[in-house]
Image (tube, rainbow, N blue to C red; front, side, top):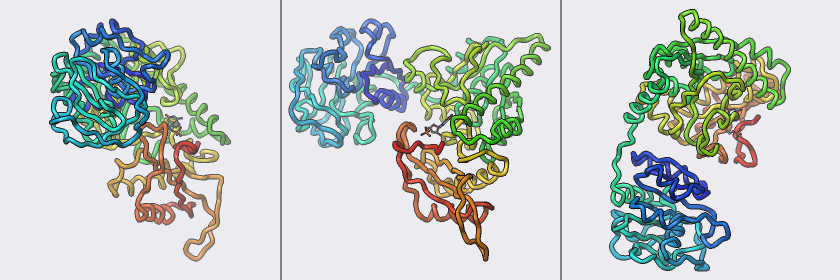
Length: 516
Ligand code: XMP
C-alpha cells in the first residue's frame, strides 16, 4: 500500500493505521510522477490530506492517469478533493470551513466505504474547500453542512474517498472506514504480522550479510536491542555487540543489557566499563551543550576502542568485520526525505551520531518499521519487558538531568530518586499514559527544610511527566495527586540530600521535555 504524502502531518499516521490493519504501507512524496508511483507496483494507493487548496497556484496535482491504471485509490481530505478535481467533479469553497469534530450523515443506507458505520458519526475535519459535485460514475455516500459531498465511491473502478480524517483517533469509525477501503474495495490481505516481519527481516539480513562479521552498539534502549536481537537471530555468532557503560544510565539498566538481554538472545557481548572516563571528562562542566558534546565525543572514542579490540580478535581468527547494525526507524527515513545512508540519520537521537570516517556498511533491520512495530518484534523475539517497554531516554542519560556539574554522588542520588518515581508510576499502572517522565536533580539549588527534629538544606527533585505523540510537542501529564504524594514522600524519606519534590507544569513549547 502506498500513501502519497501531500504535505500535511497525517501521512505517517495513515501509514501506521494501515499497518495496524496488518497491511504493509510505505509513504512516498507527492512530487513523484504518476509513472514513478505506478512503477512501485502498489496494490492500492491512499492520497493523504495536505495544506493546499486544489485551485491554488502551485497546488500539487494528481494526474487522471493514476485513476485509470486499475489500482484502487482512496482519497483523504485534500487527496479526496484532488481526486474529485482530476476526474471532473466540482471543488469549491462553501463559505463554511469545518475544523475539528464534525458530524457526518450517511446518504441512504451506509455501505461500501461506510459499511458497518452508523448513519450519523462524529469525525475530525480540517478543510475550507469542499467537493460540491462528485465526478460522473461516483455515488455520494455522506454529507455535512460544510461539505455537500463528504464521501464518495466508484465501485467499478475501486476508487473512493472521504473529506474527513479517518486516520485520527477523534474520528469515531476511522479505522473501520480505512479497513472498508483496504479489504472491501481494494481486496487486500492481512499479511503484515509480527511473525512475518521477523521472518522477512531475518531473510534480508542473511542475504545482505552472508558469512561476514557484524558489529553492533547497544544503548539500553529498545531500538538497538531489537535490531541486535534480529541480527543475532539471523547470523548468530557472526555478531558481536558492544555496550559502552558510560555510567549515566538509570538504576538497573546496565544489568538489563549485560544480564537479561544476553540471557534472552545469547548474543556475544563486549562491555566497555567507562564510568570513570565520562566522569572525569565531565568534571567541572555545567553547560548543557558542552555536556552533550563531551558525552558524544567520549562515546565515539570508547566505542572505537572497543571496536578495535573486536577487529583485532576477528583478524586473529582470519576474519574481518564488514557491517555495523544501526537501529534507524521508518519515521527517521521519511523525515529525512527517504534518502539512503548514514548522512540522513538525526544525530540528536543517537549518542554522538556515527563516526565520520565510517568503514562499515550499514545493516538497518528496523528501517521499514514504526516504533510500535519494533516493540512487537522485540516481544516476539522474547526480549525482557523492561527493555521492550522502555520509555524514550536521551543518549546523554542522567548527564543532562543533573542541572549543574555531574558527579558520582549526584548520579547516585538521582538514580535513587528516579527509581522510586518510575517504580510508583508503574505500580499505579500509568506507564502507558505517560510518554516519558524525566526526573531531574537541581544540583546547584538548595532550599531549607525540616526533617525529623532538624533543619535541612537540601536539593529539589523535579518530576517532569509528559504526554506526547512524537516528542515534538508535549503537555504535562495530569498524574493523580495521591501518586504524586507517594512519590514525593518516598523520595524525601528515602533519598538523603533531597528535601523537596516539585512538579513541572509546563507544556512544550515553551518548555522542552528535558531540562537541559
Ligand atoms: P526535548 O528536551 O528536546 O526532547 O523536548 C525531545 C526528546 O528527545 C530526547 N532528547 C534526547 N535524545 N540525545 C538523545 O538521544 C539528546 O541529546 C537528547 N535530548 C533530548 C528527550 O528525552 C525527548 O524524548
